[in-house]
Length: 206
Figure 1: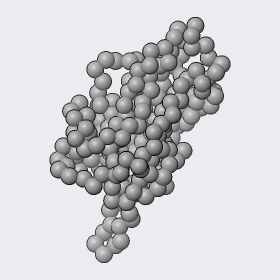
Figure 2: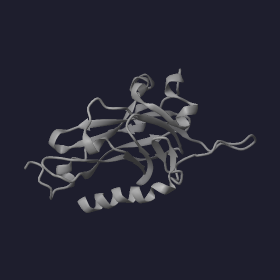
Figure 3: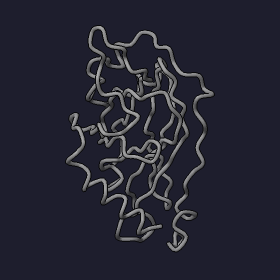
Figure 4: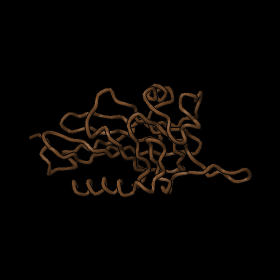
């Protein structure tokens, strides 16, 4: 599992040239669930949900865990994002796992490892989602990022330390007055991917 995680992290670096850079948020335009073009006059718009991804600037640094993190949807790379940024993606109506992958260090290990947290989302046409990439610091277990759902008012507070990137520049959160938010039933709770369960060969308590 450790080697697989390391290969996955290296794959992101190899794939980076094909991604669309939007400041410090980088979108994989080739993701099959993304709507990247608005309909021209007379054309039918592809249906989509509006999904904001928010990664605030933390108060305390945590080394390698502060670097770029990677967001997958339905098992494919969707977005990479640095701390202190938020962006907007238009995602086709669909269901799947949002997984956030990052590197962290634990106990007395010298080399970082790749870890993740995930939640299952159902994206409904016309609805708006605010996904807070919440940093969870778990001591010897390391640092994780939980793709946590929040509402508009919470999102407005979270972006105080963020730059607006990509499509969010045309629809910034602080200018939103009302949105047709998704029902809570569209979001399923996560099961923590604790490293002592995922990487059983590693000695977390030594």
